[in-house]
Image (tube, rainbow, N blue to C red; front, side, top):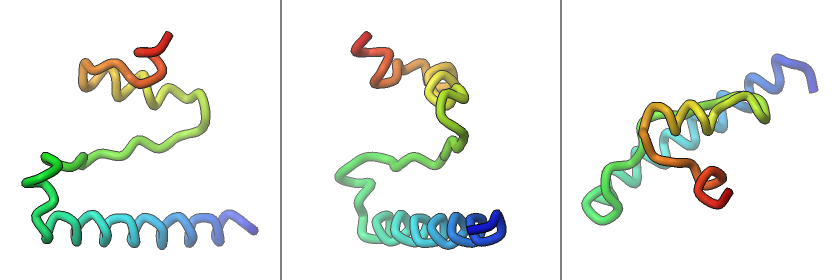
Length: 67
């Protein structure tokens, strides 16, 4: 699979995920579950994604909480 195919797959998966989240919101899921996240952090393993979310939110990540 070349980079173009991987990008197309990623794009399609992202579209499906966004459609699903929008359908959940339309059904009133946020009234039960609370507001759903509106941010995604994407990167390689050990690139600092969890640290970024931790720094932005002030909430320890799962891994930080168990160490």
